[in-house]
Length: 374
Ligand SMILES: Cc1cc2nc3c(=O)[nH]c(=O)nc-3n(C[C@H](O)[C@H](O)[C@H](O)COP(=O)(O)OP(=O)(O)OC[C@H]3O[C@@H](n4cnc5c(N)ncnc54)[C@H](O)[C@@H]3O)c2cc1C
Picture 1: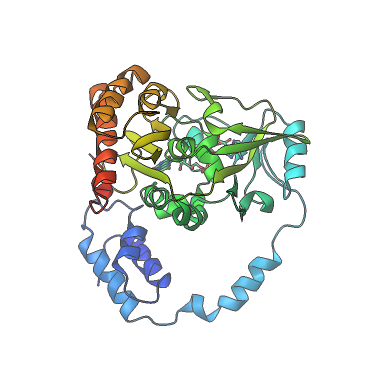
Picture 2 (picture 1 turned 120 degrees about the horizontal axis):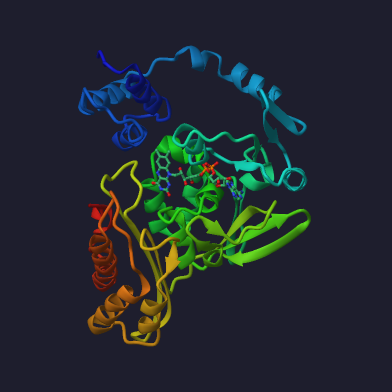
């Protein structure tokens, strides 16, 4: 089959290479980060299917062992440095080295996956004279499981967070499936999604509703902060000079927790939220015993809905309470209008998502989350 876009043909082949059988879902996932503007997706998906069904060993298969050995042999063993003119990128391998370098170069920008930071160069034409790359710090790329919590290194790729978070919180997994595209999730990190302090970052509202914490490191000093306290104002955070996010602590799920998350965006794939909502309630004998509600896209920061929570806490879990909590959202938020959504749309969406959460919990067989997009 002839495909007009060689890059899209590569996508189809890659989808085939990552899968042992024709898998429409994986092909779609691989395609999500590539917008085809001329051929349409059907022939590309057919090509992926054909490639999977008639898989032939290729040059990469023939040299697989040799390639892996060569890649391992060039793994860095000491702090690295890449220079271009007067621009520098420092590459530490340990948290201690990262802390020392950031202490020595407080003006440096931290580079993780670069899926956000790179826009400063490509879209705003800024120069970044000194960068410190955190992606080679092995301690910050691992996920540790404890009885009561997961500890996720800040430099862990979003794709690598997927299994761990999905197992605890299926809705977190579902949100990560809707986070950008596979290519961005392979490159972008959880720490970068918090570090950029975007009001429309997808993971912060979920982490806030879950009561997650972050560990901040500066020199030899560490402090643990509730993630909601990290976001102070638009792109302003509680991070001090030379301080970085080392890891994210996410409580393990408990059976009583009723956690759900919803993302509203214009496209299903590869689109940033207009509104992102996360609800985490515990109900005892029909009464709301714990309530954590957080939103993205509703304020200058990802934020808890404190008035809404106050209405919910201690109230019976019924329609009347939900309507009062919906009204309270108007006290919590004064959203902005922009090209993603108007302020009215945002507020109404937030209220409707709370109603949706209520209906879903009343009728658990109704699965409406995947249709939660504009
Ligand atoms: C096409 C596309 C689609 C996208 N879609 C989405 C989406 O659906 N949802 C969404 O939320 N985002 C989306 N993004 C934004 C971006 O991909 C995410 O925010 C991602 O998680 C950023 O991670 P990163 O590792 O690439 O961060 P980087 O770009 O490397 O860094 C981002 C910021 O965080 C800082 N930082 C990085 N690591 C640390 C650390 N350990 N401690 C302190 N600060 C740190 C950096 O200095 C920088 O200021 C999208 C981006 C693109 C290009």
